[in-house]
Length: 283
Image (cartoon, rainbow, N blue to C red):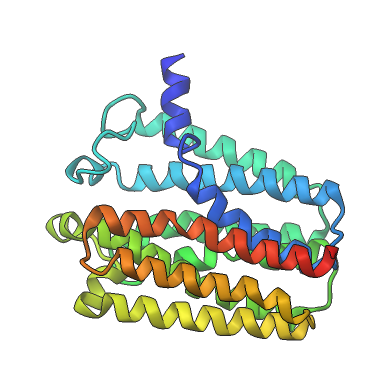
């Protein structure tokens, strides 16, 4: 039982923020590609797949960082550095989770299955990128955005320009919030030689985050324009702007705890925009 609990923690199932951040953009895409009425079966497959792939990503991330996490205050008690899960057990779990994800995606059409291989490859690559580039957050952004493309292929939508806008917006948003996450670990990462956008941007980190958030707002606004929403649906985008502003208030002194709190706050960004889309299609 203790081993199962440790693996549950390795999957970060007890900390669902990553699942939320992966799920919300996928829900946006399912809503738009399905004109507000995506089939329940496909929605369930995507939500289960989101949980499984996020869990697999956490497992391979901790496997890749097994020699580093013990030196970082926030991660030293994770199951692998704490000795509760071995590296071999982690890899077996990773393969098992990929098999489950593959079983789910096999319920969809061929185009979506093909995309899933690229998605899995990028997700597996991401944890190793922080050793050789200051831009691992871009790789994470791409990995977290494949669900958007897969939603459009699964629903056989031809709205590829909108899909592209959502894909790019989500990459920028992901880089912004994962930079906030990296700001919380910046001192430890510098000591152990890991790289991140927080280190790359240095004293311009808040400016870079702000610019990416503004670009995200512009792209999401373009999407709302293309699907022709009523004026009051734009209130969702206005709320997203205010939520981004609150994050800048949190990170104004670059305190690690506040930066991590700003990262967690992005759950509400995804939720508010999803509510805006639901209002557009359902009311």
